[in-house]
Amino acid sequence: MRVMNITLSLFRGYQGEGFPLNILGKEIIMIKKEQFSSKNILKSKNISRIIIFTLLVVVLVVCSIFLFSTTILAVNVNAENPENKENKEQNKEQQQDYILSYKDVLEIRLWGYPELTTTVTVQPDGMMSLPLDGQIYAAGKTLEEVRTAIAQEMKKVLPSLESSQVSLTVISFSTTDISVLGEVKTPGLFPISGKANVLRAISFAGGLTQNAGLKNATIIRDSEEVIPVDLEKLFYQEDMSQNYQLFSGDSLYVPKAFELSTISVGGEVKLPGLYSLEGRVDVLKAISVANGFTDKADLKNAIINRQNGEVVPVNLESLLLENDLSQNVILEYGDSLFIPMTLENNVYVLGEVKSPGLYAIEGSCSLIEAISLAGGYTDKARLDSCLVIREFPPDQEGLEMRTITLKEVKVIREENEQIFEVNLKKILKDGQLAQNITLQPQDIVYLPTRPLSELNIENTLDIIQTSISIYSILK
Image (cartoon, rainbow, N blue to C red; front, side):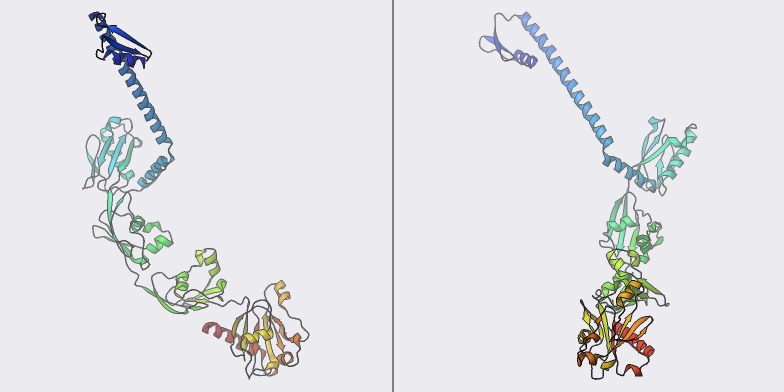
């Protein structure tokens, strides 16, 4: 600050009788004109020149230190920045399988020969220049293929050059102009930098529409070559052989799915019926067109019946709740998807009742209550021969829980199921409530038209099972 004050004071004009000189803002020395000789003026000028030169040197040194520190900091930040490192890794990975094309800019380095480092561009004819002299064909080749060719050509000029001394890097990727047409959300012409392939082209076009025909996509090369692409294998089987590389002038066309798959959806769905659907049809799509399943659907035991007789079990509970996509089976022409009715918390009431069918029970439900749910019995019902059928569960614990041992109930058979006869007259007319047994889920109540003594039990069971099957289909 003192140097600057002295310097500024030397360049001030005369003020009054003297030349004011302010040193550190404390003292003002008035130098009289007559005392300011030519010798003193010359001396002052020399001092001012020295001071100005010194000041300039100081400023230059400070600026140099600042710029050098900033550069070092920027280099360190760039080296330590994980984003830069990640970008380099992605760029390296992208270049591995990249196929060179027109307008790609490359850098050729010959280690040990820094003066031969060259930046070249792939020309319209596919050629690229070499350091010193010569050209090689590069378009349509990978980086490694071109690097090997460069090493071979340069070895003719530099015999001691090893292949490992040659490096080739893409500095700037060319833009690939790809047309994506057909069943994509935003068809058009897209400039894609870097490696262009089927997946990237579809992504640029916003993805596929619901009507896309996955099996019949095509690539039309500029040379009029047509390449079939199976997008179903690419998307659902991760078959990357279908992810073809695309070049400028190529067109990717995704057609509409004209192939119709006629399937039937039955059982516990809201709109059972026959459906003709376009494109890929799977279990989820079939359930969707049938407007979903009912509350009585047995999600664990759905089945697909193939035209060739094959039966494929489908666990919809695993598909919907656990996202087990292995259960989302593909349906083919003529297949039938059937979702059965669950027997959990339900009982069948069949035979001579006004509304035979499957009824949900909540909590405990007696035999008389179940018959009431079915609208009551008809005039033809044989009340003294009401059958209750209870199938044995596979585990012993369930067997003990579900087996009925009542003295007032006549047990007819206990083999694969427990069959017993109940006299409803004793309940309704005589008030013998012991006969009014409590039902359990999956029980079957059957009111015949004739006494049980006149019926063959096996034929009766067949009739009951047929009734259940017919009811399930009609329902």
